[in-house]
Image (cartoon, rainbow, N blue to C red; front, side, top):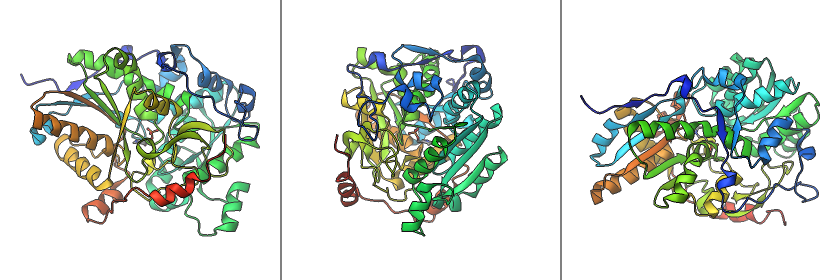
Length: 451
Ligand SMILES: *Cc1c(COP(=O)(O)O)cnc(C)c1O
């Protein structure tokens, strides 16, 4: 018989606690600061925006946090997700490396994001907040929260970056099918949106602007919470269900990983995939955990580790992260989910402490790897995930050179079946690579808050 291709867990194997990386760090990350006073924010500062259970998860240093049964019941709709040996890709690359991918595209909306949308909706329901607000870029996060809100009967309002609102009608329709209301951002329904429109009536919008709108809407409504799909500690905590499954699946496969890769936008799929391997990394420093980012938005590889705002209007707490400046508008690369100026503070802290490393890739080389993956493994990857594929292909080709048989594992964070227009542009040879936008970043860096 040929080698096993899929490593499948049963619902009984589903982790019943989230893994907290904090107790494993050499030094604790610097705390978030209040945007007005520049003092560390306390639970009371965050209470208007988030349910208390999530605020407590944001600060906990307990090694594990129990997953409520009501959350597991919904996660079981698609979890555990498969770990797959990419044998056909290995053959096409003619590499002695073993390549595995964890497939998060089997969730109802096609990415890892529902792993945190479900608990966020759950705790809002528990604490009697019937409405959630959020922003979305390409639409993955908006769809995830809309799906989770529908499961718990919550009202869901999404501000979608205007260019994507026009370019991604499929995601817009999916959100509305789940019952969410969707507005193009900048909108006329918030002060933040109206201010941008007054200054720039044709603004295409940005994630930073949309965050300002969703935060404002939640702040003025005592029945509403704001939900964020990445970056925050509790979001990465929820995503660790992914890496904990991978720990078990690699044991089933009888292999020990050498290189683990994930793409990074705000850092949540990578953190969730890699953090459960941090204790192993500390014992075995040769294990490499690699965050793959776009060369056009090279947050960890080229950004500065400093306090910065999460949004354009400066409404969010300041977070100590790798940043390209909150005023930086990244070039319009097709991996919309990776176009964020900042990074999860926990991923940044791990990078500073040498526990993870980062690499950057141009979009054409990523789409090339994605097409090879589609032809060999049969799944059209999300443009975001293609960065992890590119990283894995580069490592597999190094193994071919050296003759080493390393074990390479990457996170396929989502499928690309709503992103076919990006593939059209690539296949038509129309995609441009963006050099590191040095001047735009230098300019945005001048506005970093003085802390
Ligand atoms: C949103 C998204 C990302 C980037 O977000 P992270 O928080 O860095 O994971 C990556 N892949 C897919 C498929 C996404 O939808």
